Amino acid sequence: MHGAPPPSLLARLYRALVERGQALVRWARNWWGLLFIGAQVIVLALSPSSYNAGSNRRVIKQIYLATAPGLRSFTLLMALFNVVIIRILVTTASSYGLSGYALNVVVRTLVLELIPLTAALFVAIQYSVPGGNELFKTRRARLQSGERVNPHHLLGLEVLPRVLAGVFAVSFLGLLSALISLVLAYLIIYGPNHWGMLPYTRVVGQIFNPPTSLIFVLKTWLFALIVAVLPVGAAMQDWPRGTSRTSVELQGLVRMLALLLVVEVVSLIGNYY
Image 1 (tube, rainbow, N blue to C red):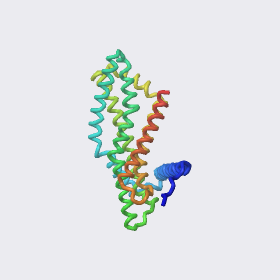
Image 2: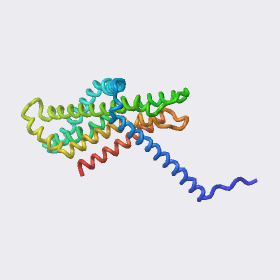
Image 3: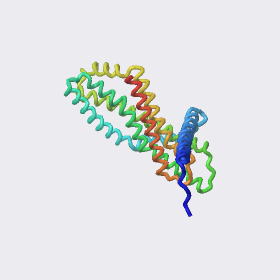
């Protein structure tokens, strides 16, 4: 007996196209689910009925958990990071005879570009991703125990406080890091003297013109929304049976990094083109 003939080239091509199409549909469905959950959270955040004594306590608790535990270590690490980067940039500019541009390069490199991204990644690693994992485990445990889970109730009870806390933490740490960078840049470039205030404020004021300031604020808020919404949004999605917590975490992290990169590239285009 002869075995079945191998599939033809046309059949293999058709099968490959079907698999690609199914993967594309799953990809679009996952992103649409995340966008829908994010839109629901934004509507809840803007609705006055979402806030009462109980919800306010939950929001304050999550803000504390998102900000306070890592505040000291983040401040110290950012101060050390800023000193190293500022010293490198200032020394490099001086070696090429461009000392007059050192402050401009420091502010644009650190404050405009690195600080918002660093604050967002810190909050993601310390708070948002672990919070999404906790929410995923809680939701799966309830479903496996046969308990009926109301998604709208869970959004208001668990998701909204975490999202608000993540947005606040990224905004607060980003502002704190920017202030640290500006103070250290002045001290390293001009030293503990008052005579450098006039050229310093003039350069910083020229950098933070209205368009640049608007792009900076929008980028920081978009970073905050991405970091706050994506991990909990991934935890709220209906994943296939057998999907592990690690798989959900990795997929959420990849999506988050991809969106952060897109926002960063768009902000670079807006600032320098």
